[in-house]
Structure formats: C-alpha cells, structure tokens
Length: 253
Image (cartoon, rainbow, N blue to C red; front, side, top):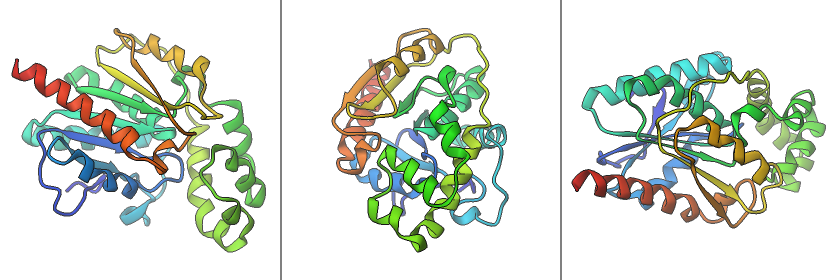
C-alpha cells in the first residue's frame, strides 16, 4: 500500500474506496475502527500525511504540499484497479479533502465528497483558528478545549500536553496557511455532516458550501458537538454506507 494510506488488517477489498482525512492533530487510525461498520460496502483508506504515524521522520508539509501529495497518491491507487473513490474529511481534514477534490475533478473523481464538522472553505481559516495557532503550552491546550477534543484532565497534565500538543500545533499552523481561491463549481455530489451542538460550525458557516458545487450539498445535522462521532461512530458510518449503497443501486439500474 502507498505510504500515504493505512488500512484495517484483513479488511479485504470493497467495491469502492473511501479516503478519510483526519482533523488537526488527529490520528488516521481512528478511521480504521469504522471499517467493520462499512463491512462489504467500502474499504477505508485513512490518509497519513508526512510527519505522522509511520511517516514521523518526514518533514511536515505545507497545506499545498499536503493536497498535492494526497491527490497524486489517490490517483495512483485509483487508476491501479479503477475502483470508485470517495473523499471524507473532518474539520481540517475536510478542507484538505475539498482541495484534493478540486485537484481530482478533471479526472472525473471522486464519486462523492463528504465534509464533516467544517465551515465553507471561503470562510477559512477562521479568526479563532488564527488566534489559537499563535498560542503555545497550556494556553493552546485550554483554547482548543473549545472544540471538545481534549479532556480537562489532559489540558491540566503537563506531560500529556507535551506528548499530544506538538502535532495539533503543527496542524493549526498548517491550517492558517490556507488561502481560498474561487473556482468553477464542482460537478461532484457532496454531503455535509455537522454536530447540532458544534460550537465552531453553525448553519451560517455551512451555507456557503453551496457555491462550491453545481448541485446543493445534502446537509445532515447529527446529535453531538464538533467530535460527534467519538461517542457514536454510527452517526457517520451510517451516512457513508447510505451514500455508497445509493450509488451502487443507481449503477445497477
């Protein structure tokens, strides 16, 4: 398998692939736990950027390098056996996946784009993310507690902060390097998934996504906050499975 991706051992090869991009500081391995729920519907390929997991020795990329590298890797894997590909990303991962989607569109890829917990690209990076990216140490940890990704115990523990924060800080700094450029709407079906209690992404932040696609994205508001799937992964795996099954039904017809 390409260095850009990790998969669940023994997952086999589903009829389609879902390439999953993690949030800032998130491990791509989280997505591997979703494979069982997708069963025979799809194979999950979790995207691992340079500087993470088995690629820890590599220098972290700029956001442009991240997008270009991931897009090239997806093209290489997809063209090897022509299995349909889908893109999913959460938060920062959704922003990266969107730019990858733009890169792939000329090739008729992907089959579907799913953005989770992410404001429209034209609104990013948000002022909150810009402000947080300039912090360090406990101040940074307390600030990102707003999103709900770190427990109060972790925020208060200096050793845990030293272990966990460098990757999150690097990703926040990567995020503030993003510069949105307007382009023609994409002829790609899109779906948005947002936690009803997400303090960072509200309805006004998701509406401008519509300008990025020829057809308005489907919008799902699910129970929970920014990391709604931590407590109930079925909230997102059910949506992903439904998208794939609907596409397969159309192709069979």
